[in-house]
Image 1: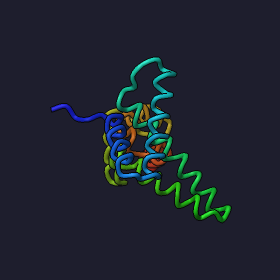
Image 2: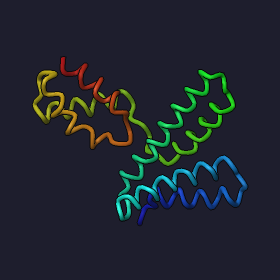
Image 3: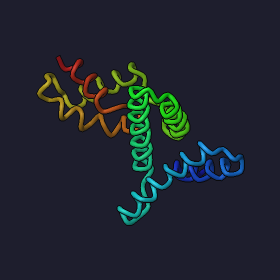
Image 4: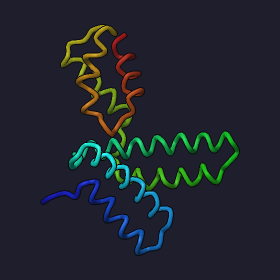
Amino acid sequence: MNAMSTKESLQDSLKDALRAGDATRKATLRMALAAVHNAEIEKRGELQEPDVLTILQKEVKSRRETAEEARQAGRQDIAEQAEQEIAILEEFLPKPLSREELVEMARQAISEVGATSPREMGQVMKVLMPRVKGRADGSEVSQVVRQLLV
């Protein structure tokens, strides 16, 4: 059985949103697909699944920043719009790792590398980051590894 790629899921959801007349969903999915398309043009070829997920994460991160700035500026309408878009985009991302899952994966990477001090953090991160890609924020990962390597 061939699982549908994230890009295909986005395209199918866009068709559904067009049929349903869901303006927010339609605009959000179009922006996401445009970002994927632009990256493919830049790369001159089809993107792999992890690259598509990375683009979606960037889109989510940018909306989070927009929502935060809008709240600080007292523009609740813009903040709510950004949060609706985040909810739509997150449907296509893998479930984030829990703190416990992240700590467990970090411990595993530390033991594989044989790291015993914070000086070896780079080696641990090199092993760990590809495994958590798309499911944990880099700053959170480095914080966990730093705590475990004390």
